[in-house]
Image 1 (cartoon, chains in turn blue, red):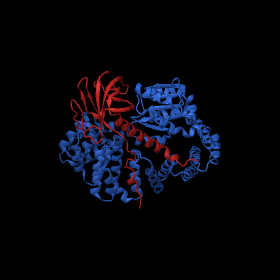
Image 2 (cartoon, each protein chain N blue to C red):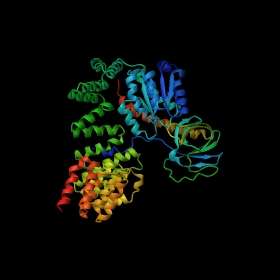
Image 3 (cartoon, rainbow over the protein chains, first blue to last red):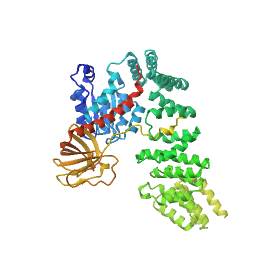
Image 4 (tube, rainbow over the protein chains, first blue to last red):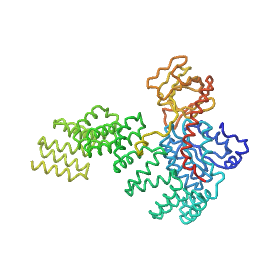
Length: 445
Length: 148
């Protein structure tokens, strides 16, 4: 039982009244967890008979569409998907957010989930392991403004409901009225920005978001919209500054790391760029998704240092990128190009040889083959390696290219070369002219 | 001083509370130290709900739980009997319910009720997790602090 919520305390009557007729959907794989959450929700005034629970995505979606529960608490990990994917359906089916809410139960590594909740504007994140009081406190925290909404909040919600229903004119009226009802109408201007975006009035949308941030420099949603707009408009100075503002206040989702490194490079923030090299080494054991983002970021960094002819730093960054790549094909291909560009492919070859490639996806063999092809003087060995990969149905332009080039070196019979080119063209028709040019080269030799 | 993105983006602005958990089954004498596959789902006033691999315990079994710091290395050697000095908290608990998971055939959810434990330490652990939740709630709501 929550240490902070006493249902008998008179000051909590408004909360009990608010939740009295609210309906709930609880989604989790464990019956025990669902029961515990329901018990917690009963304490804040909801009736057990108004609660439905389920253990999978399909049932949850069906319940949202047929029963339209006001409130949802769902585990991030459920059979058939993630509860996060249900949020949009809940918004569409229950557009009045003053009387509804959506909470996610997430693992303790909650930084990504917090970023997600902010981005989607969910009502809260309940971190696993949770206690009964943490469920209650999270729900109560988010409903403060919903229980006794001001005229401003009511107008904003009216507008948001109209916007969700696609009634843009009515939404515009509500938001334009709302911004006059509050001294800091940051949400009103955010929604006006949304509306102008719908009307494709880009400049008006930007100035609305900017006005929103002037009223509240911490308002995540407007900051986030501006971040994206500035970046896509190539206004990189502003994009950098707004990303810095956000990074100071909120956790940065790892998937944005590559974009941020790119911004530092474009803005010529040399100290920043060198910092990334130092900082990545201090990261202990990031989650897989974080590792991939760091890897992509370091690959960008490596490329930058090559362009600056700072080869030691480039190699350092590229080594880091390889280490965190988890065998992501695109990243490895990119790294291989960079190593080749700075004439350091031997280093990459060593790293491949020290890695248990059975733990990585099969397609990385294509990149590995390419590195062997570019570093080995042994034509016969390269050809045998490539043919073995093709026999295992691992097909890659890099493998065909290497095989054709080595076959030309070895002056193999024209007939066998023609059949190799034919096979390569069949598998990769987009590369037809490249392969045929190689054949012509062989015919002339 | 010039402020830079690199000063912030790799920094974890939250300090999530977490423990590694080991299990000694006092009924079947099984020791389980693969902490990475034990998920703590829920903390109760006098018990806990876990997601663990199948075949570690059965309903009615008595288990000893060892809460360890996240810094504890991979090689954990819990004793066959008695206390484990590295543990931050120990509890003897009874398996009240076992439920299969639709997420994985290899995992089950178990409800445990503590029978012997240090209530003061347990309260402190509950408070730590609760504080962690408060921090997240605060992070989500701080953008509205200057709402009028």
